[in-house]
Image (tube, rainbow, N blue to C red; front, side, top):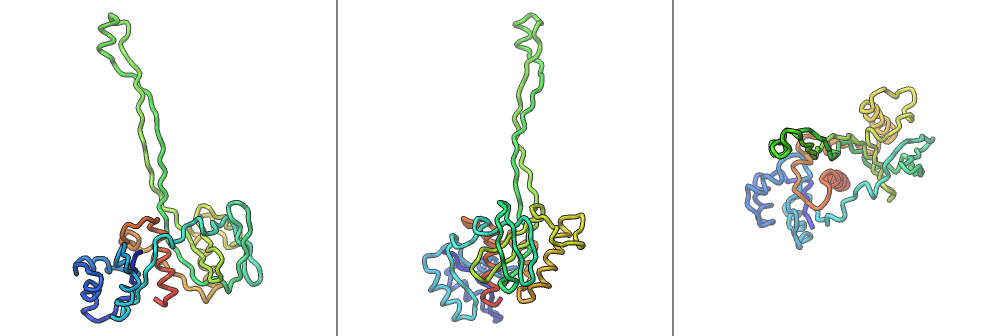
Length: 248
């Protein structure tokens, strides 16, 4: 169970009190709580609920959760295209299944980027001079073929737009390069990144009740989270979602 902090009280002793409650050194807690909230104060503890109660008594907004509660794309609808309706829209996933959603059900919009890593194995053959073979063959055989195996990993950022629902149905994940933007109609642009931004603007206009939060995409927000047994971007999205649910 981890303990997250969504809001730190304004008094000067706040971080020192959090360190006392968590049983950690002050410099460590100052580092953990630095930057844009929410932050994770403790990576693991069996006493999460009592620690949250103690932090709340000091004016912190905190909560405790199991890493298994963090949703991933397996629990989301990865959207391939959208079809607008008078009071909502239909999201079509990569398998062609349709997921209707009323506009009133959208509670939060998030933007960010996920780093996709691709590894490929490159095999090449080259001819080299072989002194031993040349001596043994009396100069008839001078070379040998050598196979070279190289592993190459490339990293690319994939911007996304997450539409989070408040009606108990799966959230909707839109990746820049996985989306068909014909739903934008005449506004559609040649560049996919521009279309993703336009789609966010469209949702903001249609769902004024749902704030657009870009914390996950800010420099250092994801990198500043401690290592947990869950994808760091999914963890960041969940932390922001829970913070918003609690009013911060």
